[in-house]
Image (cartoon, rainbow, N blue to C red; front, side, top):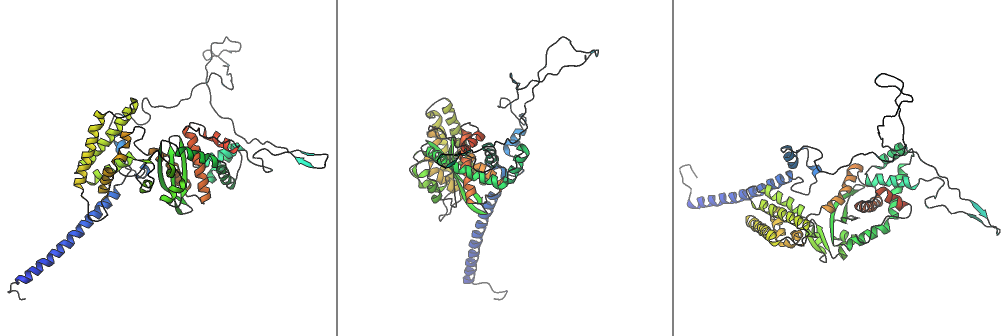
Length: 473
């Protein structure tokens, strides 16, 4: 077609159709890129306020709570009225050392035989120097008239010519499991503090041996959890000799049980054998595997929901419904706390009903703002809104039953030591060692929840009389 010729109608229509296809293609590509950019920005903006990411991963940026504190009159450190501890003098010291002045501080005269004028008391609280105490057990032999020679039986724990006693064994396990000290450093610490020089192999063997003594206590703890009214469950990844495993926890304010499994899913939860027979209320983070146990009443963690709502607000800052939902959710939590403090069985309707109406209105607005997209894959905000709409009874169970807590913090606190262990000591070398560590950890966690001494409880287990939780936990 020459420059002087005009395109025909058919050519123009074909050109328009071609451009329309290009526009549709580019529009779709731009939409996909916008969605990808939004997802990358969301991932980049993840922190402990809008996701399940721990605060330790937030980086060096000043947290909002710390920034707010700096702008207030509150000073860093211990706040007025907060609990604490202090060192006081004792009325009956173990030892008294008298110090007499030799000469007068004024004229320098000799004060021998001078009249007493009072005393100033100063006390030093210290521990004695620790040294191993070696106790020799002599197993005497006696020959009977029948010709048989009988040797006296050795006490429990005295099974070799030279062994370490229950105090050192309890200390080794305490350092490994409760204080998260690596095996080699635990051996060095024991040598420096006590003078005993155990090998790293011995320390590792003691952990396995003590775990073997706690099998019945672990079963008892799990049985008590199954019969509890409200329990908390959670899971986290673990590392065993470079392979990914999953650690599951079930707990109450007085009980802790762990389970290790290669799977995160139903096979692991079923093998754990807590939820399959549980008929009370289970608080969790909405992981789908927990829904497979309808015999329990389910409650969703309010802290997780709050973080997801914060993420929704940050993703769409021009929308008001997430802030409204957060205010209603936190308002219901505060009302539940106040009702419990007043020893009420429910939140008064005049307080609960306006908050519930505000909550539902926020969800309706959010659902209208975020329509379903074609296909199964939906945005995170849409998935959150549908979960809050369809599982309203579980999301707000804490406001309808005051025996149900707002968060799943109990399980998260109980699973945190395993992450601390991984950060300090790295992965477990074998499944056997990992299971031993977890069994002992569940034992001492339960001991600590009852306010008892962990080191004493380990010593009791080693000497054949392990601590056991009361049946009414």
